[in-house]
Length: 150
Image 1 (cartoon, rainbow, N blue to C red):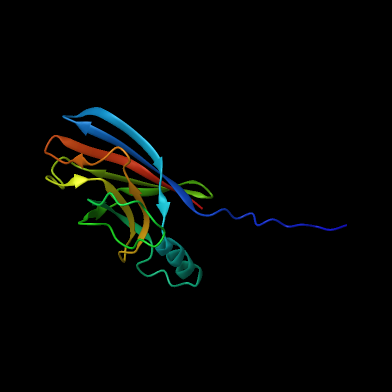
Image 2: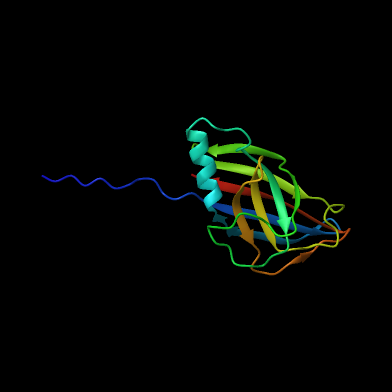
């Protein structure tokens, strides 16, 4: 009898959830998959080795490049960066990061890309909006969750 073992580990993946408000009213509810970039795998490997300094996910960046995401990306273009609101363990293999962009932040930017960043600035995940840029103005605000599945 021959036994065949399959690799049970799936690649990391994630979902980007966002709600867009104009004048306090919900105008868009958006959810799509994101790209986990090579920097994420390096950050996880460093954690496994016990080198966690600055490697935990702590920030979100809002940028202006609509280029298609690839695994080798390392940065967000013209980023507006801020700390995440918090993180929660949803299941043993899912972590949810909450974030927002208030109406008094990043005004004048045309936001089309989003990045989940480690404390040391390493890009962990990236998302480009397929619907185009959001012109940030004093009556526009964003909030959402970024779920990483291990």
